[in-house]
Length: 255
Image (tube, rainbow, N blue to C red; front, side):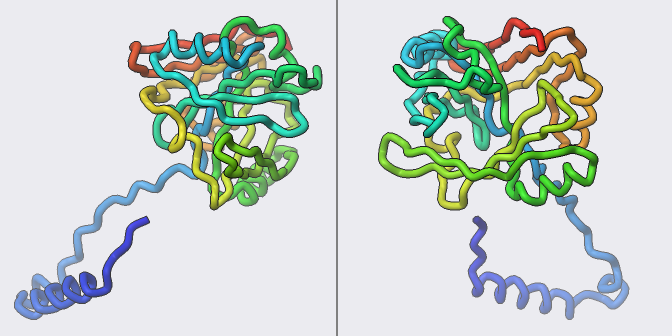
C-alpha cells in the first residue's frame, strides 16, 4: 500500500501554487501533461496444479527438475488430498497435489480423481484469481455462463495459521481446459509470498476439444494463455527456474 504523508502533500501543493503564480497566463492555460495509467488485470493466472500419487516423490522430482524444493502446504479437509508449493513469482505459484496416505478420494473429482495413477509429475489444472469473485460471477453470468459458487474453503498450514479462500467454477458450457477462480481471504498470505522462490511462471498452454469456447472465455477475462484445438485435453506449463527453462506437459486424456 502507498502511504502518502500529509506534510508531503502540503509541500507539493504549496510549491505547485507558488510556481503557478509565477507563470504567464498563457502558460497557465496549457493543459497538464497526463501520464498513461495502466490498470492491473482484474483476473490473472493464480496457480498451476501438478498431480502425483506420492507427494514426497513429487517433491523430489520437482526439485530435480527445477532446482527448487517445494514446501508442504497442508491437507484439504474432506477431499483426501494434500499439497506442496513453490512460488512462481508475485501472485503465481505451483501446487503439487497428491492423495493423503490412507485417505479416500472421490473418483469423480475432476482434479483429484486420477491422482493415484500418476507416477510422474502430471499437469491437471489451473486457477485464475480475482480480487472480487462476486463481481466476476456476475460478469460471467451476464456473458451467458452458468456458474457454481462462490464457495468458501480453507486449510490449516503447518505453522497452525489458516489459509482462507472462495472459489467459483463454470458449470455450463462445459469447457475442459477452463480454470476455476479463486479469491483469497483478506487476512491470508498469498502462497506465492510464503513458498520457496526461484522459479517464474512463463506460459500456460492448453489443448482443448472446445478450443473456440475456451478462447472466447480467455478473451472475456483478458487472460493471456495459449489455446490450441486437440482431440484430448492437455496442459503444458512453462517455467523459468534455476535449472533453466522447464516444461511440464501432460499426455492428453480423452474427455
